[in-house]
Image (cartoon, rainbow, N blue to C red; front, top):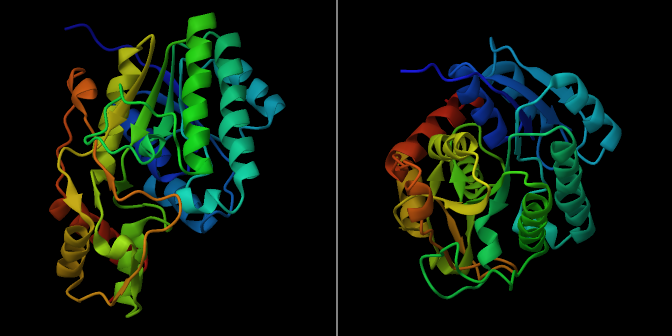
Amino acid sequence: MAKRKKVKVFITGGAGFIGSNLAKKLMDRGDEVVMIDNFNDYYDPKLKRDRISKFLKGYDFKLYKGDIRDEKLLERIFKKEKIDKVVSLAALAGVRNSLLDPLAYEDVNIKGTMNLLQMSVKYKIKNFVYASSSSVYGNNKKQPFSETDSVDTPISPYAATKKATELIAHVYSHIYKLPTTGLRFFTVYGPWGRPDMALFMFTKNTIEGRPINVFNRGKMSRNFTYIDDIVSGTIKVLDANLKCDVMNIGGDKEETLMRYIEVMEENIGKKAKKNMMPMQPGDVPATVADISKLRKLGWEPTTRIEEGIKNFIDWYKEYYKVK
């Protein structure tokens, strides 16, 4: 069997939750990794620094501290590093936060992505994989969500910026023949996750004896997707070098929010105090993924919430030194 050729991958948002996990897996299989991150304070930058210094300890990679809106810095990186492929994960995240500062989301998520696409064309990048989101489906009533569904009615600035990046990537594939694939991530969770994500907030508040906010009075469901499955799917797409596509990447089982909370309670050994709240603006009651398209590349999600939540809580207790 022919040996797989090593590639050099540029990951934006490399100190992020998905970025750091992806970097580790790529280096484990022998690829070279170059990363950029601006270590902003959307959540505690210490967690980002610890992903680099602790989670990726002992790994050999290049890290640039900077912003994807900085065209001169990107030019220097692309020119110097001789990158083969790009995984664009750097973005302002969060549906709810985008309602508070929509212009920042437009600036980072759209302008930043366009800067990366420009450089990728100029330096003849072999594949450009970027983070989209299940949020693009808005209030679509048909379940599960399929890539062929209309995504013309987003209901948050965050979702609109993600839809915009899909349109812009299509232009660059069409005009410049740059291979691009957008991955519509469905509710990612796991160790080293973001503090603004539901499982993180639920775990922290329950351990500390504070109530958790349960929106839409618990009548919500998701395809919760474990971080290892997200990474394996991203690598499948990175290796495939598709001409131009968008794909759902999510777990294969729809889980209710109340079941998700129940599994967390079982692992902590404590009941959560629940504030039953109405639906929040910009949020949707259900996001369920049709993942048949990504399955055709040979990918399968393998981690159930019972295992994934346990792994997260074990990590949380160790990281935050919970007795």
